[in-house]
Amino acid sequence: MRRIHNDRGFSLIELLVAMAITVVLLGAALTMFKKSADAVSTVAQRAEMQANARVGINSIVRDLTRAGSGGVPFGGISLPAGSTPFFAKDINGISYMANNTFQQGVLYVVTPGFNDGPTINGIVTDGVTMIFVDPTLDWRAFSTTTINNAGTLVTMPAGTAPALNDPVVGVKAGDLMMLKNIHGTAVGEVTQDANATTITFADADSLSINKSTAASGNIKALADPSPPAAAGSYPATTLYRILMVSYFIQPLDANGNPLALGAAGITDFRLMRQVNAHPPVPIAEHIALMKFSYDLSDSNTGLATTNVSDATIPNPGTPPPATVPAYNEIRNVYITVTARSTRADTSKNFSYATMYTNLSPRSLSFQDTYQ
Image (cartoon, rainbow, N blue to C red; front, side):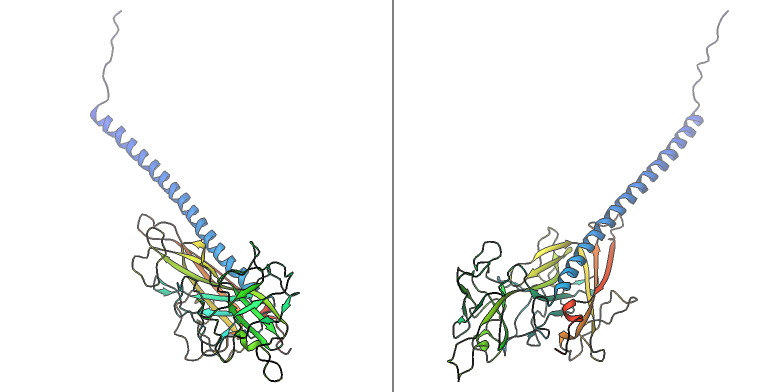
């Protein structure tokens, strides 16, 4: 019996229909894959942003919690008369914040840096500076009376521990030292690495704190008056290393190199932490906003910062008032930190994640002001 073979294939219409169905299915699959990939990327970027913001805010909180600790006077430390010392400036002469001088003549436990940072997305960012005693250099058991007449050279007694030139915690150029005796408290910037016995506080220091010719507020002002004591003699004086910590946002160019405030070509930002007059170190990348607000012990006075409310944070703020109260009235600090995504999306838009917190520095909020 003869078999009949049907060699008939797909018609053109059938082929076109099959191709159309295939294209639709592939398109749907690709769309689902892209959405899944975008979702994974979004989640990863948000996690990275939150991590950056959390690192930054945790570092600030840790230092603010210690602000004023270790024996820093509640009202701050008087600075040399007639001087305007710097903060957020290093031994190389580089300033990292605008208006970075102590205008009130006092080194306060917390000094606001209202609108002292770069402008990002139309908002002028803030900075902040705080001080506390360095717990790694405990010299409370060692006092000295060997200080020269100008207050520029201090000799510590033999056996001082840790040693002045200890390789790990020794005294370095750019450190700040607080000196205390019965006549008060003064602060000086170390101008060269300490040797085994002496610490130098020469004039013309990078922070403009050492003013041996000032009428008051310098190390020389801690000397005994004359008469009855001989000029230049000092009662027992204790030294402490203090940490003056400044936080600020540093602008960067496309290659990640630091730029000056107001410079052109800014493409990214990072949060920096600076200690005393040493060069700053990066804390968190892609930080696009940092703002601070404060509660005061006297609610009838204003402060050069924004008012705080959950509805207005972050807030570009208002110009500071003509006069501000002493910063030792600060009792509570509100912090806003915003991180930006590493890269823009397909629409060239960046994502942002903001974290808020507030804290009360123990040495400011729980101080017995009647002592």
